View (cartoon, rainbow, N blue to C red):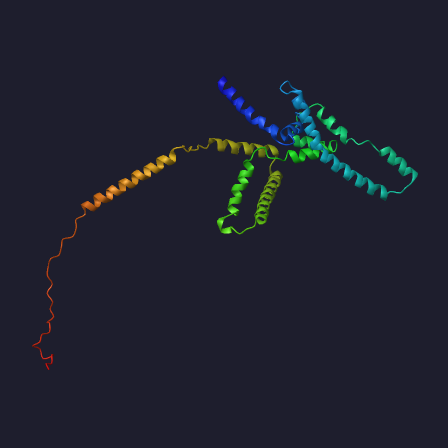
Length: 282
């Protein structure tokens, strides 16, 4: 058992080391975006100081475009707001009192060095998006990445029904629009069904119904497909065909053939001869 665990750990280390070659260290940044981890996840003895510096710098570089976007939008909103207001001494005093230093540079430090919180990432960023606007925007983009490719594979299998050989002349843009329409339609239907269920059932009732459904699915017995089942099927089919062929040969041998008919037919018509009056001689 110990050897199996060590082999599994070695294989995981092999795959995990490949994440260091991804530009921007997305996996490390997404780990820090979870409020249960933050930067304290890398402060354990399993991580060297070199990787801590690299991951913190990657987080800072990933945050720069969002900080620039927020600063640009703030300048435009402040400019339109100041142009609309009256230029009076009272307004100037209010502007000076409301002016605050830009907290975008300190936003990363406040978040990464704060205490961890055991809460779902989506719920945390929805609650703290005004306190950490740049990091919340970064979390919205990075945490939306699928953890696995299973959903994408299912989408490709669905697209196979659209990209049929009979529709070989459909453009790629049309296929993309059809798939987007299909996904949004399914999402709208699921949302409508969820809202309809909320009107008649409570949250506890819906959860208990899901548990009952899962229990029923677990009780279903599934016949597993063997890796050599197809080979056995082919062999059995060949044996069956051979048996059918032998049976046909035996059957043909047992069927009696019809007897040869050697009777001579006699014609009842009289043939013409030279002695008949029909012929004229010259």
